[in-house]
Image: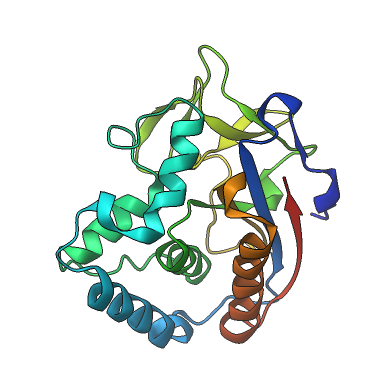
Length: 222
């Protein structure tokens, strides 16, 4: 599916609160899982060397995600941003979860940046896409998470309703072995700034080319 990134919009009510880095990645073939081995190992080693022994509140890279949640009135100590759960797991000595090369790359991106990352199969997304605040009663089935309640949370929605947010993505838009056109989204508070957000988008584009032999196009939305 071809989707114009410039057509993704932010509802006016959340402008000034949320910034998005959007990257569409086109994979021409199934990726080799081993292509990410050194990338993952290096990221985990750097994380453990820098942050072992610290609580989540003491880890600098997690501060921006916590600011984003607080901007939406969400307590990040009760509803944890997705990278925080993964980073806490790795700092406890548990293994990096290997799922699918495209998903693994998203998780490395989250570990390195500390920002929430969403990954969606564009064949399962129905544009236009809007970033907005969740409405009363909205929810979706998460990936191995059951029902995810969305009221008040920042989320992405298409013509069929919400499909992603910074805590957990939906099963409906999830990536599988036959996925080829992918949408990566990094969620950030606007205080991060376009320069830093742009550097993380460039990071993903470079690794997608190097590790997945994929082409990409990107856009910043704030």
